[in-house]
Image (tube, rainbow, N blue to C red; front, side, top):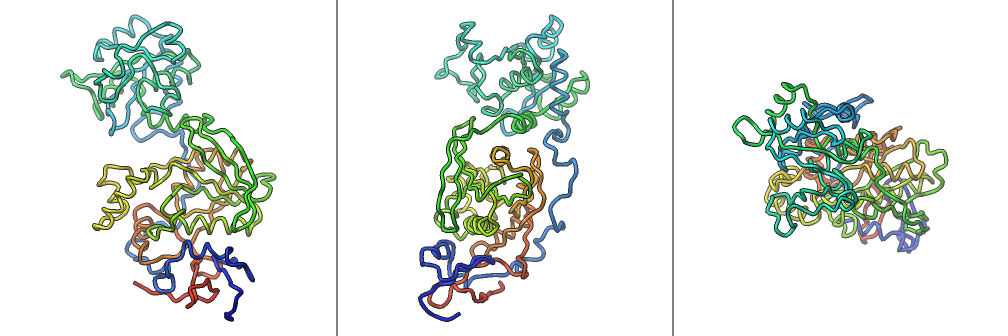
Length: 453
């Protein structure tokens, strides 16, 4: 490259020739002396690679309506509720890990009450929506400040939003009644074991089988509702000139928690077929401060660049996904554990946190609202591919996002590939998409000097 005042920005296959310096700032935001620290994708430890070489094929395994192993399906439970039967509902093992007998209040009989008393704690509760409680002038049995119950259950009120706001039996009772087309009032009672203690899995499965009852999990009910309920509303839109080119920014607000997400749209969606799409999880440290621990910022920039080059596409930026869903504070704590030798998966587990708790229903609904029907998804993560498919979006193909591997993020990427199934690819020339610097610290189009380690 001839030296001079004209800079040549290289990010993947795109070039900005004769560009002013501000166009090249992206190279500095995500560049940490790559010439000295770049490592080819092939340098990832071979023994850490997964056995699979691609993403899952089309099958029913990733249908969100399929129940978790050992449970009945939510549609089966809804039908039983509609018919006036009881179901056993189990919450998360990290919560109470208990099961409740639940049925619709409008279907309760003396025989049903006797069954509740025989197999439950004897405390039979009725859950209903707030407006019904106000209409009936039912006060709280326990003042919130005086409530010593571990999970602070409001014993005569369900939280608005049902299990999507609070993953409890109280909310599940109302949700199942509503889904069955009945009045939004449920009856529930905790199941006890023969010794009087709270029954838990696997004893609850034995009980359900013995009494010929369906048994479902609240986690499955949450997935069922997320697939069907409207979760976001369009708030506003405006044209935004970016360093890659002009985009239209669409703000979407979550109906559940008020969190605002953004979709950057390039061109016209038109028929919505084969749209280039990136669903990007918020990463403050990588996206804003250029952290070299991860590849998030580089993936964000590369996706925007590729959408601009294509002339049509969407990048959905999902907030609330920090640290794969654990939050910024926990992510920094996990970083400290990684500095002590744990990998990204082990650090989360040691903190008692999920490895990946992200959920893509809101992203899918944003895409559908924008008119996307089939998409070419830019991702290396099979969970994202599966998660979006489960919400009625067809994935026509996958576009890998190949970004620089450095001494700072190599172990992180190895772990994601080995333990989380991430699949990495290459560009048309078989090389990683790179940003490189010349000796003067300026972006250069020359092939990078890479180091194996």
